[in-house]
Image 1 (cartoon, rainbow, N blue to C red):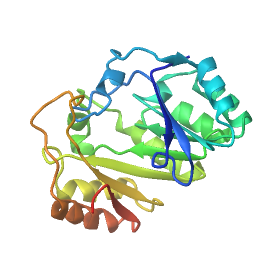
Image 2: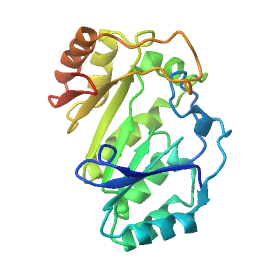
Image 3: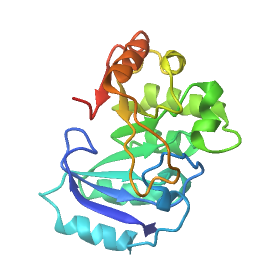
Image 4: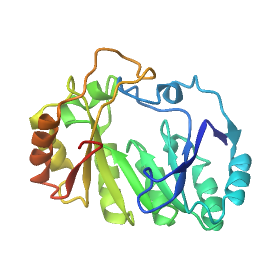
Length: 230
């Protein structure tokens, strides 16, 4: 299995863990605000394979206690559960970032106890989901299935939305709140422009807008927080 990026240590990506972050290539979405578009479109070259990753983790025993798998979309890789098994056998906790479009693999990994923490991106309200994802259509039934799986079976989890001024307004967060009603926690994180973002002329909302959006979602998910906003 090819690994397309490795952040050797992070205190942010995996709550309550000192972790490394493993980036996997490929994605079934083309979000115009994506920070990792070179992973999504396949242009990023692999930096190692799974055996090299495991060798790295062997050397980091006692320094790290978690591994966060992100992308791209990790659930595009059918080899992922076996890699997670080997990572867990070394004593590491496992976090998964996902777009929620692969509930079958997600459910199998949760049922097997391979994942300690799941972070799922909820892109927008149902009416604007495909537009926000940069594709013609999204199977929202799979998104809702993944939401239910995570809420019912994940040991710990969060839902999150990257907020972009051109794509989001307050009513969208009412709709998102209804989709994840009763969830443990929900984060709104502000879009930040970078050279790797595939489309220009996108902007972050201001802090007051974000707080208004958070209040709308908090009617359905009381623990709604802003991430990366003072």
